[in-house]
Amino acid sequence: MDVHTLLQSLPELHAHIGSSIAPHVYWHLANSEGYKLPMRDYHEFVNHIVLSPDRKMPLKEYLDTIYHPILDKLSSGALALEKGVYETFGGAYRSNHITLYELRGNPMKHNKEGEVDLDHAIFAMLRGMERALLEYPKLRAGIIFSLDRQFTFEQNQIIVEKAIKYRSRGVIGIDFANYNKTGFHFKDYTKLVEQARDNGLKVTAHSGETDDTNDMWECIEYISPDRIGHGVKAAYDQKLMAELAKRKITLEVCPLSNLMTEAVKDDKEMAYILNTLYDNGVHFSLNTDWPETVKDAHLYEQYEYVLDRNMLTAEQIEQLIVWGFEASFIPLKNTSSNLYL
Ligand SMILES: [Zn+2]
Image (cartoon, rainbow, N blue to C red; front, top):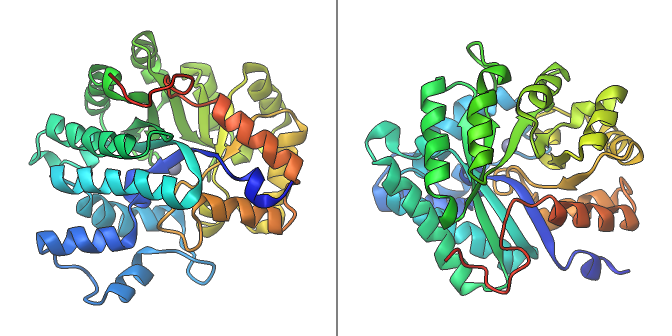
């Protein structure tokens, strides 16, 4: 099968709003608002926010110095959110063969620290998605609300309540994002996650990206997620892989993001991880995490990256695409309409 046929319809299960908005859209948003940016020139700005093999950066440093202070800020407020989300979905469908897109974001990271009403921020995200869905009827899409491991329980509880409130408008699940700071434990979230699930939401969590597998074990034990974001460290824990396979938990693997943050050392280690997971019956899909903030890392390019370097075979890739669609949280994937009505 030629590559174009193999990659003609792709699922994207793990991408964050802040890192999915194209730099030229950010530039437009920043200049529309009149924000002062660290760089006056567009190309210098792109070089500053985009990671590449020549410009790797540890995850924590990227989150603390670029992602949260610059990208979250520029994608905050109702106008920026609507345009950012709209452009992201449309671009993915037009240029990357993405036909199913689950975009995630924490509404409280896009509301200018409380200056913007949370419901206005959420509606803006949904409006952006709806405009794209109307324009591209073959695109399936949904939004996942990310909780934050550094937030208080009460803050995260509000996010879950909002996710439940907007479920019928296309909020499809919840996620746990960011790195731990102050005594975060999955066990404190068992009840809240149950409440989300009882109300029709699906559950995923970032885990097993840079840390050891203890966090993944706790995640499985206390919140029993449908999927896990990253989870690549499981490749070094035989018992954990057996557990993931048994529970049919799909991993959202994001190859180039992990390589740029050095969560995974090099292509060789990535190839080892992908094949070890595959050989141990762990379901996983390929995703971007940061499609616009890593150079040449759009979803289509990530598949080409893996194929060109023989990290996986075409047959394995075909299987991964099927697993990705199967693990989707979007309830409308088998209906003729892509609209939440
Ligand atoms: Zn992520």
